[in-house]
Image (cartoon, rainbow, N blue to C red; front, side):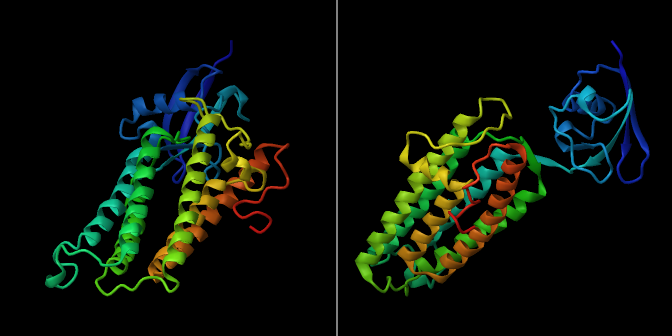
Length: 308
């Protein structure tokens, strides 16, 4: 059996960082990262990007050395991804924040509104309903993070947690300030508008959860297997016939329902920004599906059926 010699160069300076002798041909990039880590303890595998070209894409951990376009002396390029943090930690942090922040405004803790309103409650029932819906949404997200989601990547750059938390926490505070404000006025069309909005919100929350369960069932525990998602017996998953990322479609619907329920401009702005970001993610996911699976259903759109 032939063995490989592997040299790892710095992607920026081209300096040699490591030389590995007698590497098994069936060694994976993940195993090479572990070998590299032994000589450079400061760069643990999760923060390593190993590439065939200095400006190329990162190789996957499961890529096998002998299947790569390299000779028996293989040259790879290393880039430091920076300090990493687990996806679970990021999700729990960015979702717990809005839950707690919103409740602070709902209970009108001191220093938010004038002192005479400290710990008072709103006279409008829609304010209490909005609090329940908002809390339900983020409790659902926290529970899904702990018990439903299976992440294809274990970590993300530490800096992302600050960006993500600023987004979620900031918008939660902005929305909560106006919805729970003592001078808040209920929606224009009253009870009918609120009830319709509640139906939309709950329908989309159930749909979103159904899609997450369907996606979870596609990937066995501990694997990074990717398959084409198809509708199941659950009617909420039938939207897979028309869109690639129905979890985002239902997420958008939930926030449209919440916007209609509260008739609050900051909520509408949060929904718009979220829609733009989810569209970017959905388009990228859709392109990935088309590239990876030749038999991918051609009728599907990224996030909105027949539109987008």
